[in-house]
Amino acid sequence: MQLAPLYPILYQILKPAFPSCLWTGVPHSRAIALTFDDGPHPQYTLELLEVLDRYSIKASFFWLGACVTRAPAVAREVYARGHWIGLHGYHHHSFPFLRPNALRQSLEKTQEAIALACQLQPDRVRDVRPPNGLFTPQTLDLLHQWQYRPVMWSVVPEDWVRPGISVVVRRVLQQVCNGSLIVLHDGYCGGQDVALTTAQLIPQLLQQGYHFVTINQFWQPMYEGRVHAY
Image 1 (cartoon, rainbow, N blue to C red):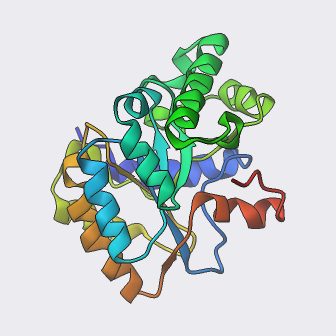
Image 2 (cartoon, rainbow, N blue to C red):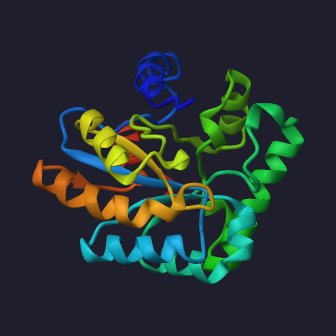
């Protein structure tokens, strides 16, 4: 059963209920963010990078620590090309099902893997997107307590079930608006189509007058410049 029709409804309910999370950019700007979960993948991510380079677009990647460990050279290439990096946990485990110590260890282990691959300080990667979009108020309390920044979404076309590139593109175009935070996947589950999907999406979104920014740029108007920048 595909859940794609439910995500716009969930977004409308969850965004006002959890205002400390980043759900979108500002409504008066045509800036939107392309984000990619579950990578890096040794093939799919590199194919995606070529598409992003073709249009000189910077995206944001939420990585699984295990995937960074398996493909450190790919992680290093993503970072070297100026894309924004966030955390998705070490394995794709839903945060509410982890004990606090296990959750913290998962995030810190992912930071360490990224730091080793990309030659940066671990605490410079602070943005976190919960796998499967699952979180609780306690999850958010812990993330804030540990000084992480929770990042959510506004457009989820459910590309990981591979409904077809045209279907994913249509879903995004139907839902996109000023400030949209779009979630696609470049990992082992669903990443097979990500480069072709992105190659179709970008020119159509540019034609509609949108421009692309990173997650860090979305945080800035909310925090008035008080950002933990790279």
